[in-house]
Length: 113
Length: 113
Image 1 (cartoon, rainbow over the protein chains, first blue to last red):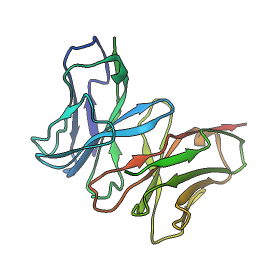
Image 2 (cartoon, helix red, strand yellow; image 1 turned 45 degrees about the vertical axis):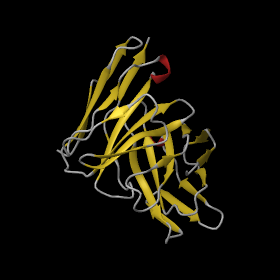
Image 3 (spheres, chains in turn purple, orange; image 1 turned 90 degrees about the vertical axis):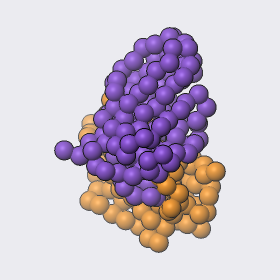
């Protein structure tokens, strides 16, 4: 079954404690993205990746890091989380360079205390 | 960068009525415009999209129209049903920009009986 998976699905942490949210897709897609969703602000792109070892900043990259060492995985790293990073995070992938037909993961709800 | 504005933020219609959601974009180079539906607690899912070389596209009860001159596009849902209740997001991107999708802030549609 074609899918995008994220782990963990829910996470409560404290300010400053490094965390990683994993994202994996089994569709051999080249393009992957991370979004955060906040009430009234919609979905905002954090980082995206065009292929292995190729990443670029989205609209809200501050406080986040990513890596793309394998085609199927695109982890999101928060080196020093802060309360303003409390949000719902979605990973997405597509095989289209214009962002067409993005497949979204189930989401990760993060609370930073 | 691209800026996508979406209106209204909330919309309540009676079952059987039509619903219209409007978006405007700022970058005249944008040429791909998808619409995503997000049910409560679920991930966004693509419901329809349109490219800049087409003025209108229809899929059963949903349709999207695009006015490139005015830089706005709209989602039309006819004969609304309770299962249409969800948050709808418009988005815009430029072909070849490697998955750089910019989303609107979302419209919460409530279909009442």
